[in-house]
Length: 67
Image (cartoon, rainbow, N blue to C red; front, side, top):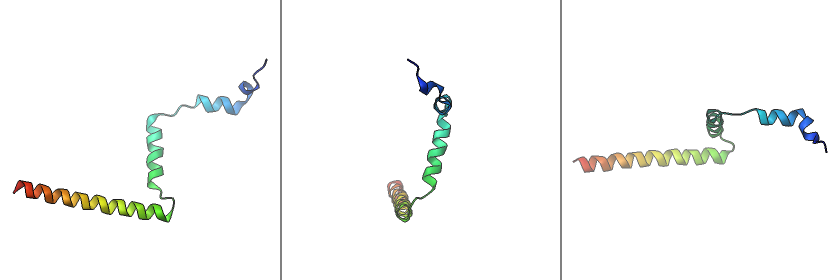
């Protein structure tokens, strides 16, 4: 019995293209940089504000421990 999928050029090309890990990482970082909706912008702003608050609190704790 003949396997006709082996003769299909699109299927063979898809398997022969190997991507490196760095390409996956680059694509993931590009995906993270682009907000998709207004809610993504709000969530990212909240995350940035939370991160800033945590950094400030950690600095205060370190200052208190050093004194």
